[in-house]
Image (cartoon, rainbow over all chains, first blue to last red; front, side, top):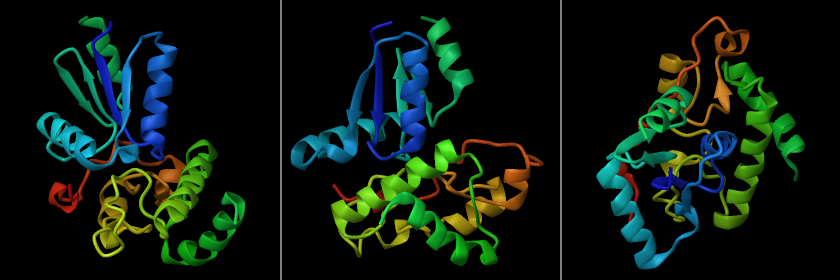
Length: 83
Length: 110
């Protein structure tokens, strides 16, 4: 359950709801607020998001090797079960 | 200005155009607050659900209401953030789906 990464924006409601849902699921995850990054760090993370989700939209949630674009409860449930 | 005042102000302008605020206030109010956050951050109300460049010219397409709203509301009944929705969306007569990103990723400058 430790390999969950959430690329989010601090101002985005779908990101907020997705994180809330992951909290409710009781899982631990690493969250990066991309809008709060600057310079090289931002560049690096945007590139990382692009590789996983070419649309560079948020939230981009990575659970193990599954990439979930947008807040989809069903896809999160499925990916967590496959853990 | 607070989110409540912004709500009243925009409602008057947008509703006659057929764009309604999402009736789910747990979505709408935080989104309006985020618009005000972005106004403070950048000087303009960039879409809260997109990665803004912080440059007015480069973010012109995502100034709320963004240029993608029309097509998204037409196709999905909601804009990308789901701040603006159609009457049918609020009435629950259309399926609520996650709106995919329409903005080309090239618009995000590194």
